[in-house]
Image (cartoon, rainbow, N blue to C red; front, side, top):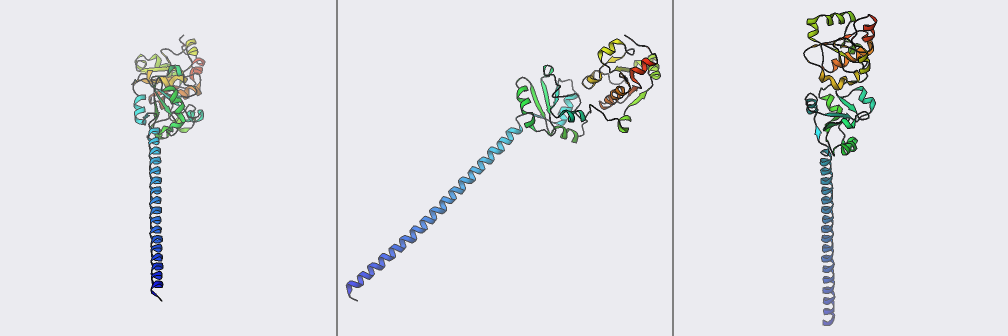
Length: 281
C-alpha cells in the first residue's frame, strides 16, 4: 500500500471514529434529556396531585365548618337553660315521631315566624348537605347551628329521645302510675296535700274552659313537650286528659320529660264527669 492510500485509510478511520463518537454522545444527550423531561413531567404531576389534594382537603375543612356545629352536651345545656332556642328536626316525619329531641319541631310544622335567634338543625348523622338550603335561608337573620353527629351522636352520648306515638307495652305502662278519680278527688279536698300538688289538665283550651278540675293548670298535650318548664318542680303532679288513652300518653310524656312523681287519673276527664265530681268553669 502506497503512502497516499495509507492516508486515505487513516482519514476514513478518523471519520468513522468521529461519527461514532458523535452518535454515542448524541444518544447519551438525548437519553439524558428524555430522562430529565420525564422527571420534570413526574414532578409536575406530583405537584398537581399535591395541589389537588390540598384543595380537596381545604374544601373538606371549609365544608365541615360552613355551618357552626354544636355538640350534644352543648345542646342539652341550652335546652335546660333559659336561653331562647328552637330545635328543628329535618328528618322524615316517620323518624321524628319515632324519636326526637325534647322540644324539637319537625321542619314541616315549625312556625318560622316564632323562630328564636338561635336555631339548631337536626339530621340523622350531622350531614350538612341535607340542611344547607335551610341554613342559607335562616342564617341571614339568625344564629344557625348543626347538631354534631345528629341524632345518632345524641343517642350514643346517652341523651333521651321522645316519641310522638308511644308504644303501649309493659315498659311504657310501668312508667305511668294511675290513680282512681275518687283518690284524685280526695287529694284535691285535702288542703295540706293540695298545697304540695300541681294538677295538669292536658285537654285543649276550649275543653278546659268548658269545665275542668279545681286548681288545674291547662297545658294541652300537644304543647306539653314545649311548655313543660312552666310546671313547678319539687311538687307532686296529678295529670289527666280527655280519656284514659290520652291521659296515659300525658303521664308517660311527663315521665319522659323527667317528672317522676306523677299520678295519672284513670279514665281521664270522662271518668271524672261520669262519677259526678266537681267541675269548675
